[in-house]
Each structure stands twice: as structure tokens, then as C-alpha cells.
Length: 394
Image (cartoon, rainbow, N blue to C red; front, side, top):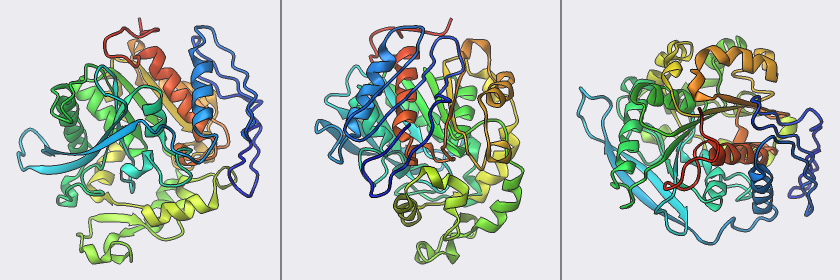
């Protein structure tokens, strides 16, 4: 059972089914009471790092205070292009964060999904409960959390040009900047790409094409699309020019956003999420381009992911409306569906998070998603750039 004590309402979910990482090496089975005290049962085959990570994450969210007073963030602006053949310069704004010095640490680069800016990974609601970047920083990782092109403070090119391959190319440039010490003056030897939804597709495209990262963490993404999405999406999206939040910006009609009141159906399993957070999500929503949509579905079912030869983890909500058949994912379905898309040396692992919808970082189960992600990163890549991973893929 997971019960939150931070809200007036009480949420309970049956965790008897467990939070399973479908690989022989790591399996979580959790029974957690979040109300100032915790009962945690974790079954695992290897070292006890998983338990330590879960305790860390739950400790971080046990109050509404800042997760770590030592976290320092600096706003950075980098220049990118849409492709090797199009050298038009565009600016991307991001935040490089670390608890203490970033030197010698692995950096996690977070790529948000459609209609989200960097806020998805550091959500301004009951912080740090809904902040993956703060959890990662406190766990010993640096993070670079950025507004992808067409969102937030970053430039907004012609929307038809902002495609998944273009976003992958700009992300590739960011990875190279981080390795070269051109972001915040720190050279990072290890880079993990973290994606959500369309951001996960961008991460797959980047890692499979450029092969320049050390780990790939995918959330809210599998190689499947719920047929109901084809009916819902045209009714739930419209040009941002029609939306009161964006009308004054005069973006071209190819910049889209969700219609008011639709995010709950698209992104949430409402019994597992806070209505006040969903309302906040409406106020902080961002944009997606028609160029992203025009390239997303063709790339969703290609096999560029077979070209990823570093560790991969994919976390999907059990009740994900966008990706799960009839909004219901099982561990068996996900593992069988995804296996053909990854090479054996990716050691791909899959997590189905119970009672959770599409936006894993914004549900009551967010600390469990964070714990699974950090435990995987610790084992497969490692926090230190100067030490080998405890459990590398072989």
C-alpha cells in the first residue's frame, strides 16, 4: 500500500502485485506507507543498493522542504542546429544542476515530452515530491534539464521543421557540448539520456543514430499506440493561437497545445493523481509541433532502437492511455512487445508502475518511479564518471 500524507485526501493502492523490473538481476517488491514512517520490503538478487536508493528517495519526499539545500543550478544557453545540412542557429535554454560540485559525476540529460517544457522533470508542486531532477541531484548525479526547441525559453523555429529527427540532432549536440565542457565548464565522461513520451522517442533516435551516450532511460513510452489515441488526439489538440495562454505569442498554426480540460484523460490515471496538480499542469502546459507528430508515428515502429548498445530501462504506467492496449499494460505484454526492439547488449529492463498513468513523474507513485530509475542508473552506469558501473551489461 502507498498512502500519501501530504494531501487532505488519502490515496491507497495495492502494491501486492509489486513494482517489477522484468530482468533476473533486479526485482522490486514494495510495501510502503508514506506518512512519516515507512515499511519497505525489497527482493533483489544483487547488492543492497536498491534498498538504499528507495530509502533515499522516500526520505527526500517526506516533507515539503527542499530536497537538498546543496543543490546549485545555473541557467545555460547553447546554440544548436536542426540537422548537419541546416546550419541555421537556434538557442536552447537549460539548467545544469548538481548537489555540490558537478565535477566527476555522471550527468543525466532530461528530454520532456509533447506539450511539456523542462518543468515536467522539476514540477512546481509539493517540491521535491514531483521533481525527478532534485532526486537525481541528491542521489549524486548532475542533471541538464532543458526546454527542447519549440518550448519554454528556447527558440521556436518554423513548426514543420521541428521534427523528432531534428530534436534528436539538437540533443546530440547538447551531449557533445556536455562532454566537451562547453556547458557550465564541466566535462562529463558519462551521459545518461532520460526521455518522457515523445521525448523518449527523441532519446531513442539520438542514441540509436549517434551512439554517444552511456545509458538510456525511457519513461511513458513503448513501441505501441493505443488505438483510442487516434480518435482522441484530433479532438484534444488545437493550434496554440486559439488558446488563451498562447494567443498573444502569435505562433504559427503548426504549434499545437492541448485544449483546456483534456490533460486529465490524456496524461493521468485520476485515482492515482492529485486534482490540484492536474490543475497546475494545465497552467504550465507548453507546445508540440505538427512536425513532431508527422514524424513520431513512423519512427515509433521502426527499429533504430536495435542500434542502441548501452543499458536501457523503460518505465511505463500500468494505466497509460496513450501507449497501453485499452489503457492497461501488464509486465508480460510490455516485455514481449519490447524484446524485438532492443539488442541483447542493451540489457533492456522494463518496469510497469501500478496505478499510474502516462505522466509517471506527476502521479502519487512518482517516488517509486524515481527509485527504480536511480537504482537502475546506479547499477548499469554508476554515479561516478571515474568508476565502472557495479553491474555493467555483458
